[in-house]
Amino acid sequence: MPPSSRKRRALLDDDDEPTPTQRRHTQVDDEVDEAEEDHGSGSIAQLSKNLVRYALSCEFSRMPIKRQDISQKVLGSHSRAFKEVFAAANTHLMDVFGMRMVELPNREKVTLRQKRAAAGSDSQSKNSNTWVLQNILPEKYRSLPVMGPGIAPAPDENHDVPDVDGAYIGLYSMVISLILLSGGTLSEGKLDRFMKRMNAGDTTPVDSTDKVLARMAKDGYIVKIKDTQGGDEIVDYIVGPRGKVEVGKEGVANFVRTVYGDDVEDLDGRLKRSLGLGEDVDANAVNGEPAAPVQNVGRRPARQQRRGQDSDDEY
Image 1 (cartoon, rainbow, N blue to C red):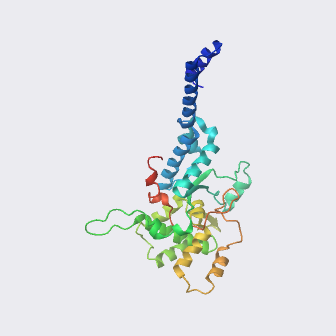
Image 2 (cartoon, rainbow, N blue to C red):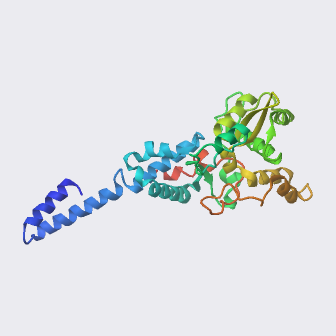
Image 3 (spheres, rainbow, N blue to C red):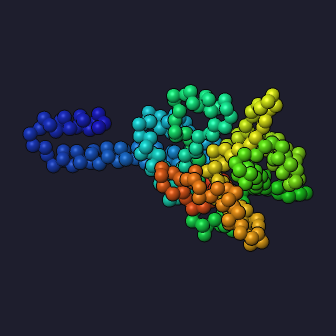
């Protein structure tokens, strides 16, 4: 209770019979205090809106949403309210933007050194405490006329500027598909051959091939694994945490179905065998709940800045 209200209450306590005017003042003061508590800078409602804005800004630059950063940049001295603020922010994201924050899985321990380090560590955590935004729009809204491609720069007078973001989406979707269809691990040599067959052996519409692959690793779509066997360095690629959540096995299956259509016999059966669909729990499941409707390969609406335009005043 603010000091002014405590003073007024103390004055009223000294009076045996408060006057009607004093009663009205006390009632108004209580209503003001409650309003400040509900809508102040430290309220759950305001903190959740701050978290929504922070989550959208992270997603725009493909940065993971870390719990430590939430505590420092959003909650401040209200870090104990993390669960309530997180739940309220997720509700806003789902209702207004058609997205939700989904926790990223921990990075896989692939090499012998990593497995030994993990086995000898007592401080392993099952939760990564890191989230990204996931599209939960119904399937009927997941079409190109509704969502559209990424935002392309304005065309030059002499030539059209390519949609760099759209090209990047296509490239990381293809690389993730190649890795998963190869059993979850793809050697550097095989990936190089695949890229050359796509005329992307040296350069792409985004950047040079080496820089694009490095960017995919930085963004968490793929992970580059270096190991030594018999004195030789072996380099492999696996799918990273963001790649599992944003694309995943079902996303790859939809991608292949879109490319091949009905021209391949028993396509669904072959996809199930290649991807191992149905053999394990979907990595996109959250807190034991089923995953959101199957994602189409590609970015979520946060990147296009369209669904949020009608809510700029609120968020």
